[in-house]
Image 1 (cartoon, rainbow over the protein chains, first blue to last red):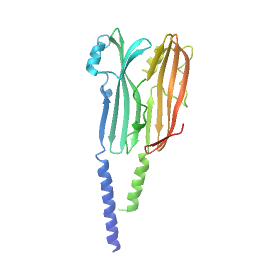
Image 2 (image 1 turned 180 degrees about the vertical axis):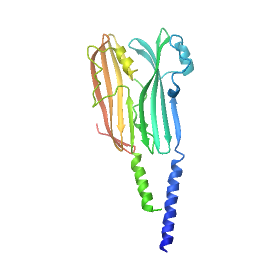
Image 3 (image 1 turned 135 degrees about the horizontal axis):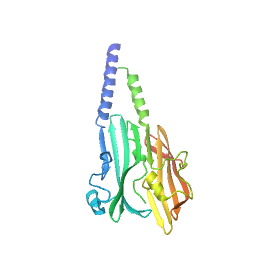
Length: 134
Length: 117
């Protein structure tokens, strides 16, 4: 009788474990947001001294920010990448910063804005400061 | 299989769920202070842009401009995190003053946030 009870308990434990794993397995994904892909580098069509502002806006769309900073016209595009693989999640944020002189690209660079990781859940991206800029 | 072991694993997973770390911001603060790169009376906006990149916010009025950077970190289990805004005020293209404002000190546990300040 004791052996039967132990077997029953073991089967129940295995069933609970299988159910837990079946909930975790679908939690594998990778998602990104933004109009450029940071892991691909600077978009190839952008060339310093050649590409115009309108070409940039046509291909990448409206930027996150478009303003004059220290006298230089600047456009900023954002990119966030979140990955979750079984028990581990990671986050990386980047910005594509393009500076113009006389409406021609004078400088372009990718800047890292943040990173994070988390166990058994998405990294703390829910706690990130808002992307919107003043 | 031992049921206690399974429950123990479940509890461990629950605890580990609260483990995460996030850092955001282009100017890393140490103990809420700016790095020594910034020198009042010397540093220029272009030096800041070249070193730390595009600010989160920017405004300009006549001879005065302000760059605003954010710095944020949030870490581990029963979590402690801080959120700062960094104001760099320039006059005539030279750094006039710096201001680091702590916006929030937060404790977070398993997605439940509470702001302590």
